[in-house]
Image (cartoon, rainbow, N blue to C red):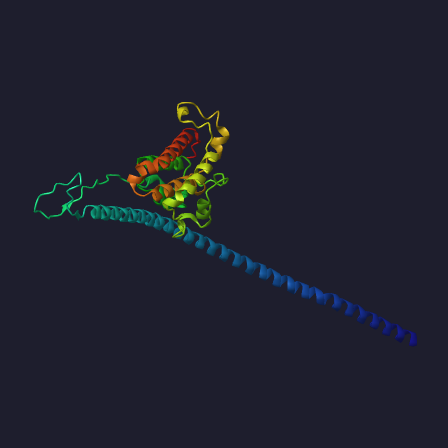
Length: 319
């Protein structure tokens, strides 16, 4: 009897122990299933949020594209308006200068172009020569080019100056060269060795994009500037580019030199023309540039134009 009771108690204890073990095992299982359900819910919610985010991003992309198109259109309109405004302002300045020169001056009986009439104290106009020079217009194809919009409008206006026919021919050759390069700025620039310090400072200070950055060259400063520029230009220019070789084929002889000069955009020939502009402007008016004082400058402009023209003949067309 006692043995049976002890056996029964032992069986109950074993059963209770197994039940507790089952409960201990089942509890984490339920918690794990609950956590798994929560994770599935979160995954589903996260997917919904991702879908909404994609939709918003697509919507924002469309809006950004519209805004970008509007910005480009406004930039073109602003560029054209600025060019016209600056051109008109320049013409107004020219007319005002001519008006000042045409103001009546007192009779001078010693002057070669005046006729003095006794007793006549009237003032007669000074016989001034009115310039008929017309500045080149902004190229229409550049208005449609995204590459040109990045830099060319400001550069065109900066270099487009009335400095005589030779400079005008050089300026047109430069525009032709940039067109052949599809208005792209080269990653490499012209060689820096012996480059004028005025040019280096101008480039460092954001070129024409910063007001007042242009070197204020005076006639007394021209001796040193023209020496430094001439030295830099000799380094850039191959001795093989001779004036009498215009009809020869320079491509085979000057391949390395051609590659070093094949620099477009802000980092290229713009720097050479900027130096010639400063030099020519510092000489004074067209009478000074066309006189003995401007002889070296005119020779340099012709030489630069010659080299650039020959480069155009052999440069690869990127357009």
